View 1: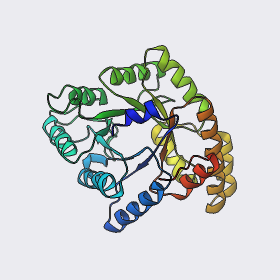
View 2: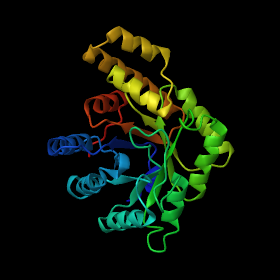
View 3: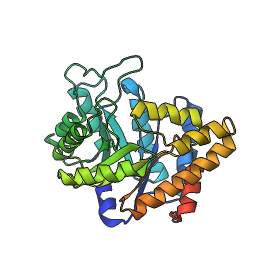
View 4: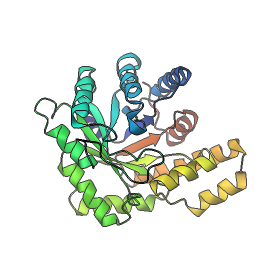
Length: 295
């Protein structure tokens, strides 16, 4: 089922994001976690893509297993990194053959060690080009729902929020069906982002991306990478609890619960959880929000 249908029919569309593990043991654990979280009856889940496309085969295999064996709707991430147009077309054909109907279309991050993104030969520079290529494909143009990324605090490579928003509108104008935001911790950024997006004509669902604080150094690293501001309350908790993992986890769950409550009450169409291939925090937040349904 295409995910745009969930946003039309459900008051709150809930989704989870996972990444492809690098080992068979990690993959086995991932499927256990996905099966565990299936009990919460999410609308769909998504699976990310590795730098340089180095987990492409894993992503394709994992999305197929999640959809056909575990029984959850799934969106496959697809990036411009290291792929020519011909390679992108082959991936689209493979996804379609596997019955995958949803794609998260992204430019992708520069490979580790490189400061700037470089388009591959006969490839794409921007996610908007990838969206256009898919939509204009003579056979597969209507086969997929496409989600794209949005940055409430501005893209780390484009701190001009208005210009970054214009880039997002271009992706939507090319045919994106939904926007999923990068993580943020201050809801004011999200609500302002939505207001500005609507003002320039972006009318598709804009879904907040949520990453619970479960490990101090990890969340600081991710925030630096995506340009997200960490509120003083979180800084103080990280400093106070240090390596006390149980306490920082408890704090992170409580903080994310408050954040999610305010987002849903403020009109967010749903929540997209960056799970980091863990289930505990997500399950507890669901319980606190009374969102869990029987699958």
